[in-house]
Structure formats: C-alpha cells, structure tokens
Amino acid sequence: MIQTDVDWNRKGKQQGFLRVPYSHNLAGWANVMIPICVIAHGQGPTVLVLGGNHGDEYQGQIAIRKLARTLPEDSVQGRLILIPSLNFPAALTATRLSPIDGMNLNRAFPGDAEGSVTSQIAHYLTHHLFPISDAVIDIHSGGRSMEFVPCSHMHVVAHPEQRRAMLDAMLAWNTDFCFLYTDIAGSGLLPVEAENLGKTVVTTELGGGEGITAAVHRIAYDGLQNVLRHLGVLNGPVQTRASLGSPPSLITQALDARNYLLAPESGILEICVDLGAAVHADQLIGAIHFLERLDRAPIEIRSPKDGYLIAIRTPCKTQQGDCVAVIAEPVDANAVMNL
Image 1 (cartoon, rainbow, N blue to C red):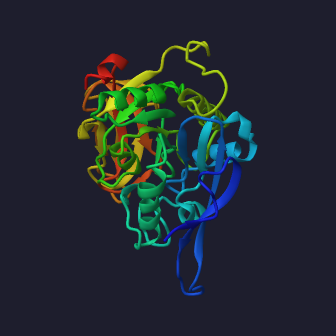
Image 2: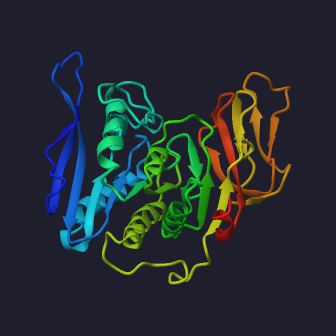
C-alpha cells in the first residue's frame, strides 16, 4: 500500500517521500509522508542508510540529512538510499514508539502490508528495500531512556562470510568501543530481518539522552561516511584507527542476559561508576533509592562479571524491570569469528 514518486532505477539525485496510507478523524485519505533521498551514479553496491527507527534518537537523523543535502551525485559509485526519519510519526513527537499505533518499529518485522502504519513500513523494507540492498546501516542511540558509550555494534550472525563483512564494516566506524549484542526484549528487529536476507548490517548506539554533544555528532557523521567508503558506495580513502593516530577499537560483547542489569524494584537510580569504565565482578554499579522510605537502605546493583560499563539508564526515576546498566566483556576480533 506504500507508494513513492522515487524511481529506484534512475541515475542522479532524487528527493521524495514514502507515502503511507493513514486515515484519521480529520482526514480520510491522508498519508504519512516519510522523506527519502536516492543518489545513484556509476557502478557499485546499493546501501540503505536508516535513522529514526526510534523517534527520540536524533544522531542518525541529523547525519543522514546532512548527507542527503550535501552529497554530489558523482561522489557515489552505485546507489545510496537515505531515509533519515524512518519512524516519521515518532520523530515528530520525539518518542520511541509511534504515536499513531503505539508500536515499536524495531519489533515490527517482517510487517504487514495491510496493517497499521508501523507494520506497513516494516513490510515495505522487508519486501522492497532490503531485497535491492547489499548493505543496511541502521543508526541508533539510547534515546531518552539510555546513554551508551558511543559505539558501532552488530549481532553475531551464523554465516562466516556475512559475519566477517559485518565485523569489518563495524570496525570501519572507528568508534573507541565496538559492541556485540543480543536481544533480550523480544523479536521482530529490523537488523535481524535484514541479516536473515544475507545483508551486511551495521548498527550503532551513539550516546543517548536528551542532549547530543558535538563530539557525538562528529562520530555519527564522520563514521557514517567512512563506513560508506569502506562499503564502496562513496568515493574517497577509507580511514582506519591507525591512520587517525588512535589505538584499535575495543571490541566488547554482551551475549548473556546477565549482562543486562534490570531494576529489582522501583525507585530513584544512582549510578556509581563512570560510563565506559572497566568494572570487576561484584563491583557496585548503582543503587535504587526509595522515595517513600528514608529508613530503608537502597538496593545495590552489582556487576555479574568483569567488563566495561557500556550503557546506563538515563532517567533517574526507574520502574521495576527497567534496564539500568549493561556490562560488556572484552573480546578480540579473531575470537568474534569463532563465537
């Protein structure tokens, strides 16, 4: 049901929209208009770049908009599909979930062609955009709920050639930390759907919270361009950590549910360790204080293992079951290929 005025096979630079049917109380024939840019030139791969999978994550939305506005077509070799605010209704309201149907786009795949707006978007990617793409870049941050050490990350996929391609692309972002993660909050993820189709998938967690520093914006914009050069769709030399005068990226993994620390009770969260710091097993990571009880000692949250504090909850007000911290363990690149 989604329509577009973009011609996927035309050379040059096109700006247009994905038009998603949406009938509401004041408009029976309305559409949600998702901005899209396609740049095609020469011979090369097709790379799909997505931001705003969650509407309150703006790092990718800004970086992709800058590329869409400034990239000349002759800088591309192949086809570059840029969608800065994929979950457009959520981006308009700065929310993680769509205000139209309450759905989390990153749990909506493979989607439904005749479902709600979020389901239609997921279906269109699954059946139209993923099949024509060689690589998919999905830029995330912690949004308003979490703050991460800025990192590129990936799933550990089964196919060795696909895993190697994803590992190399993840490292090409040149972040200080890289992160291998698993899913503890359900199925239907966008990256998994693309991975299942054999695509090279690169994802990120670039900070989080309400504010975005200039340093994080630079990581988003410079890293994205470097990955596009690495994938061969953008002209120019590929930078490495060595060429930038930096030590190798620290690769970490959180593949066990115990790495994701959940609040045992509701209260006010105190984080006791600096983000990105090395931690040891049983080290105090945080504490939950109780609003109603001055006489009750806070509940301590301790690390289950050695590693690094890769992410923390941003809002201090915390509900039982919220993820309050993530501990990631170091792993070398060769070991990644043997996991």
